[in-house]
Image (cartoon, rainbow over all chains, first blue to last red):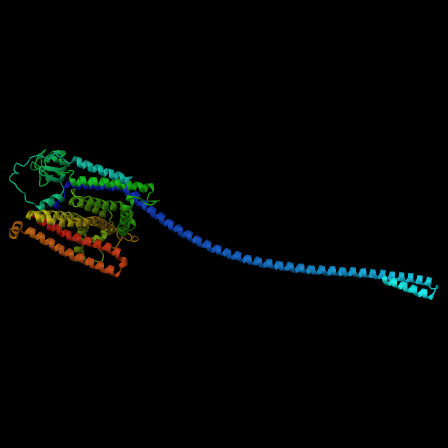
Length: 164
Length: 363
Length: 83
């Protein structure tokens, strides 16, 4: 019977102890602990969210990078193509120019040659004319001497002429 | 740091314990003791004396030497007023009278008939409870300080924090949030205090030689009454409307149902809480003491039987101790979770956006 | 002390307490046995849920045990009434 008979003192002390414990712990322990735990969980959740966000950003950045890279590659190819074209054009132009130059030089040279030739021919003509005149003069001078001498003389002259 | 200070405090407490063990145990009071030779071993008295409250910490008696710590007795009676004195005034067997009070069946009563006595003594249950709670409060305040400083909030928790944090999180997630919906935070301090109040008292009550605080009906009664108050304080008009006028029930059934429901709220639910905790806590102690008593019962038959039975007895006691540790946790949890469920029922359905658990009213 | 004198000495309240405790043990045994059976079957069927099942099993067992202990207290009271 004693066992199931609560005694007054213990009831009073238990009530007091429980209420004091509740008050002290509620103020100094449970509040900071519970709010601390909440905060930490919030922190972790935020961190995970931030990491997720960063990951997404990274993925976006990566695809952007790839796009840029592809674009750059295209550009490079284009540039290369253009450069090649330019080169070909320049070469072709240079060739054309060279040909024209050559043609011009050749034609100039031909013209000069022709001129020189004409000059030489004219000079030759003049010289031949002069010689002929000289020879004719000498022949004319020596005609009266003898026939033999004349012929010999003509020979001499002709050989001289040949030597020339 | 916190742990170390708690440890030193523990050491100090035990030192005081040992020093204050009274060695003045040679009071001769055996005038009629010559007659009783070889007193018979009575397990019922032994067990009851151990599980019940007492006015002193009594460890052992060898011959006339009593190793015990007397505790203060605080009495109030309307006629005599307040009187405070040490329990050693009553003598070791409680045979003396002091200031007109005497011990009768382990209870203090006035010598004169008709004098009403209110007994607020610091019995061993009270002293032990206060001691244990002081230690626990110091420990928890230290931990609370650490959280305030940011350890465990922005960095990893350390030391005792790791011990208590899973328990606190468990109470929060499995007890408060499940049963109380969005209002869980308001009840967290109460639920946590309740859980640890039962737990620490039950665990410390298992130390051999100390009082069995959690297995005392007054202790569980108060917890049940406080639970009832909290439950009633959190009820809504919706709850009472359903209680007194349950919808969709025929009138004649209502006549039966309403008293039953009322009894359920006011008597059965808190009563079940009280008796369950009390029975669970005291049963383990009784079983352990019964096994110890068995040794002496066998020993009375023959000395050989007593000695040969003791190893088995010790084995069973060790096993029972493990179960007791488990039971301490489970009962603290069950008391807390049932209180939370009853609180949740009090405001269930009052606003439909929160959904406290759909538990039936288990007893 | 013989069994007969024991019976005569202790009286019927002791008998009632003892029988009550025995009946409570039977009831609790059946109840906890059922819980254990259910839990083991559940774990066998769903090993991955074994932790949750175990926790609930212990809880249910504690509740059953609580009821059995009510009976034990009642038996104890009966025994201690005359003692």
